[in-house]
Length: 283
Ligand SMILES: C[S@@+](CC[C@H](N)C(=O)[O-])C[C@H]1O[C@@H](n2cnc3c(N)ncnc32)[C@H](O)[C@@H]1O
Image (cartoon, rainbow, N blue to C red; front, top):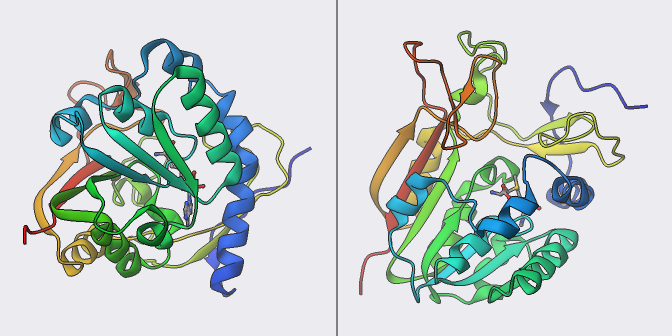
């Protein structure tokens, strides 16, 4: 039996530690679910050692020998994909279950990696300030964070001068469109937050029975994200918007041979994901 989903996200009025506690409990419980899911397809990772999207590989460039930090790494599939490409990787997540799974996968695949349990805002203190050439943050990370100014400052602090932040995320505009064919705006782009949601299962298995079902999330506009990055002293090198995404967020999307989802040929396109690269100025 599953609890009914919230009709919509009500404003969350709790404290920062309640915000964090809800989300951590939610993520701890999702780890086993995701490890077993078709969406994450861990067996495919075991065989190929690569979950990165082609545009990420092109836009980040050669990572051989480069020190790469991956905050909010979940159980490390993308982190370990960078390791398989030759980066010296450090993954961080506040979920002990996620980090235990990441460490186990790294050992099983014999890929060198460091994984630590910590809050993303504490990343420089835990991973090392100024210790990274690349900070990589992947899809589905920012919505969990209430304070983008603090987040961007932490990402900038991780970087060595001349290093860069690479962010690959779901486009906030896509998040306000209906889930049938994505042609109608159904949410307020400027709603902000934080907002409280309650739902069972997860995006990887909507029908799974779960008990930790409350999350606190905040939608950030594209302007807020770019402004936070620039405000942390990073120089934006590019912001690319992509008409492809990682899952069938509307029934109209079709999966291509590259495993990405896109509208059928000839249908109007909207930005579904984006990538941003921003460099820390050299000394
Ligand atoms: C959607 S997942 C990241 C997705 C990742 N790109 C993937 O597909 O595997 C979001 C991750 O952020 C982590 N997270 C959320 N809030 C966090 C925080 N304040 N500090 C550290 N990790 C956090 C969660 O534990 C979860 O593993």
